[in-house]
Length: 161
Image (cartoon, rainbow, N blue to C red; front, side, top):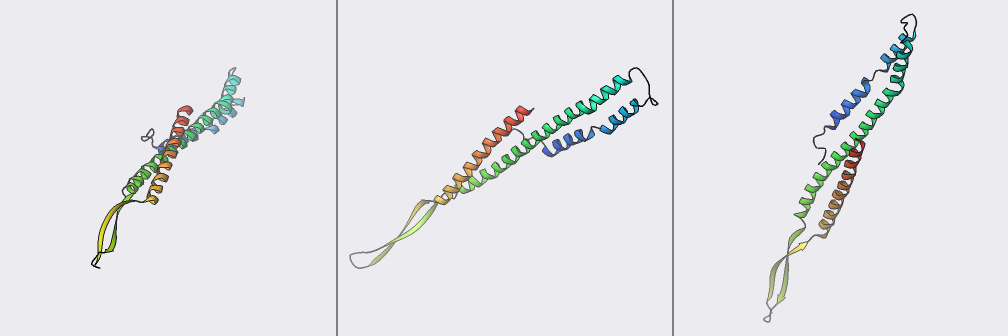
């Protein structure tokens, strides 16, 4: 239950807005404008142009790559939450099956006594439904698989941040 308060859609949207707000055209316009001697001439022109070029070619790329790595983390969190939801459903299914594991069976025995009179006795016994038991086993296995994957996803998120 590590990510129950995370709104995956909102987080993904915020990261995409951050990535989309990186404005390459503004930086490229600035580089173009300060490169033009008719627009601006100063001793710092080359320094500023180099800094803006580095911003465009390196820093923006680094930032975009970092945001992309966070988007991968968001997909891990989304998968975790889907598995968590599936496990909640599976637990309900397991509980429902457990109520059906044993049932009461009624059966009769008939016998003839020494006077030749036929008698029927009614009996009840508790019987285990092995098909339900098998279903319960499959559900429990799926829950455990999901828990293992959830632990792995938690580690991936922890190691990615």
